Every structure is written in C-alpha cells, then in structure tokens.
Image 1 (spheres, rainbow, N blue to C red):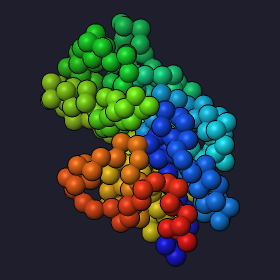
Image 2 (image 1 turned 90 degrees about the horizontal axis):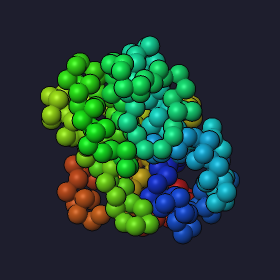
Image 3 (image 1 turned 60 degrees about the vertical axis):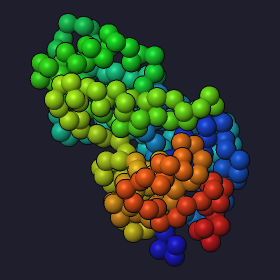
Length: 259
C-alpha cells in the first residue's frame, strides 16, 4: 500500500446500485480524496454520458466531477479515431451516449452500410430486428467493436442481462471476434493511468467484477481489490482465472486497507 498514489474505482456495484449509494461509499470516497490519493472512476456503463454520471453522483454526495470519470464510450471514441478514422459506425446501445461519441460518425439511416458495428450496453433496444440488422452488417464485412463484454450487472431488481451475452452470439454467427475497448481491455487501464499521471505499480483498482475489473487490472500491473457487493457471486469468485490481491466486504472498507 505504501506505493499506491492513485485509486481507480468502478461505479456500478461498487459505489452505487441503480445509482443509489451503497452504505459507507460516499464517506469512504471523501476520506480517500482528503488523504491525497488521485482518483478516477472507471466504468463500462454505456447508458449515460460522463456529465450525466457526474451530476447524479454529485447529487448523491460523492465528491466527483465529470473530469474524474472515464467511460467505455469515451475510450471507444479515442480508439475509433486512432484505429479506424472516419469510419461509418452503426451504434446499438441502450441510453443516449452520443455526447461522449461526438467525434464518431454514426450512421443509422437504414440505407448506409457501416464500416463498424458498435455495441454498447444492453436494454430493450437489443431486440431481434436490431441484432439481425447488426448480423447483416457483419456479413457484409463490417468490423465488430464492443464497449465491453459484461454478461450481466446488478440493479435494485437483481441481476440483469447485459450486451456481452448478445455479443457472444454475434461473434459465433458472423465468424468474427469483437475488438473490445472497455474493461477488461488493457488500453482502458492505460488510458486511466495516463490521465492520472501514475504508473501501474502506483495504482489500485477496485471492482465487483473479478474478471473484467480486478484480474484484468492485475494483468496490467495494478493492485487489484475485489468487493463483495454489486454483481459479486461466491461461485464466480471461486471459479475465476486467478485470485485478487485483496478482497473486501465493501468499498467502505477501502480507507482502512489504504491506511
């Protein structure tokens, strides 16, 4: 812990569930900030923009601003600009994230054949017609770019299916493999570290997803902390491909670990 200068924190399932603060999370984040740690909230959430997330968290008492938040859509926009500049993209996602994709050329007129099929988070929009249309684009040669591979996430109504489940089907059906831009992509963690100006050995990642949050961060050289909230399941922990550096009951316990 002596080497840690920055803390990367997943939002959904760690700080909040259905955007309601988990017990002790607000106070813990405030203590971490007051102790001088650099903080980045890193999320695969694709239903809201950075500004909207910051507004919601701030209203709940969390000491955060939009510049503290790194989202999968924001990283995706940078990835597309670097790897396929000017590409025409067909977006399938739930929620309005166009503000964070301002420099991405989105074509959803039904007539233009896109260069990229871009998948965000799942919701009612992921019906048969939309998925079959994406499948058709892939058959015509479009690249498949996914903001994450999350199979599910936790809400106040329990676990809900996410786009990773549909992504697997599209990959199999179209005989292709998606380029993933959000967690667990190494590029996502690199972007967060660059924003904070620290090396991997100086950073700690806190998440409720053992594979995408914690073990992926550990492979990137960060210290991993798994919390037993959100989507955490004992069987997922048991069957994971590795062991977290630290396991806590909740984010509220993090300040004590840092001390």
